[in-house]
Amino acid sequence: MNRTNINEQVIVTALGFKKDLAVYPRRIEYQGLTYDFIDAGLRCLVRHGGRIAEILTLTDGSADFRLRSDNRGYSWTLLSITG
Image (tube, rainbow, N blue to C red):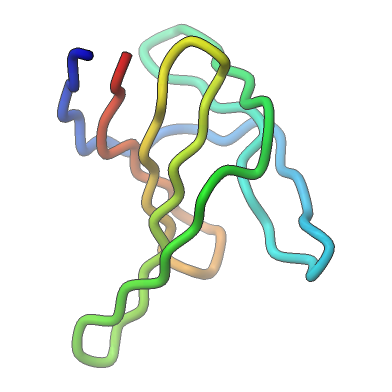
């Protein structure tokens, strides 16, 4: 599997909600392409000092995407694509 490190902000065009009302991206746009995710993925909270970030690993069925949220849902960063 090839892993491409990206670390760029992406546009989230659709959001989903888990049972506990946690928000996750359902669709993103990156470099003119649209990626639709098939599930809510895996979630991990990371605390660094007084700052909390959320790391999500999602899949579109053919590749895995790792995204970071500012934990407020305003800013999403695509960290890497593995596939």
